[in-house]
Length: 236
Image (cartoon, rainbow, N blue to C red):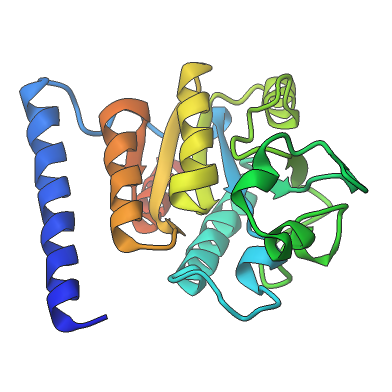
């Protein structure tokens, strides 16, 4: 990537952020819609699995180290405050030509599909994540959205524990994250997407997801702002 391309991307990102701010102002609505109240909140972590965090081909997604670190910071504070942590794992069951992945195989090569099939190594939660199997929840999905097909394991789990505000991190921002965020809002969940605890294949793709979320589906916050808010609540 040359300097001109980098400059062009920076200009596009700056424009998208400015346009989003402008529209929110014109619509006369608040930018931050939801207060994070621990008794109502759950942390939803999407696809932080070996196939993303430690792919066998070595072609890791850009920014994944920051996502790992920031997600772990969120997990730690949620464990401390007894906020449920729910890990969403991608897994497609395949036997011969039969699969429960729907049209998913049409959009991915065989190498990727091998990594997310039949509860294999690629589907396991990455070992450096602060996953606590004694207290955390694990749910599975076989589509981009964690709420499809219905009734989803995620929706059933959230209903059972009575949580309606979802703090969301993970990957990929413009695919599984955005699909889940959109469905969550349509199901009347309050969404807080963590901008520096998600990433995708290109900075502009990420920025478009953050723009779409801010405009129509939920709040966009940083890891620090969420942790600071949670800490301030506990001191009250």
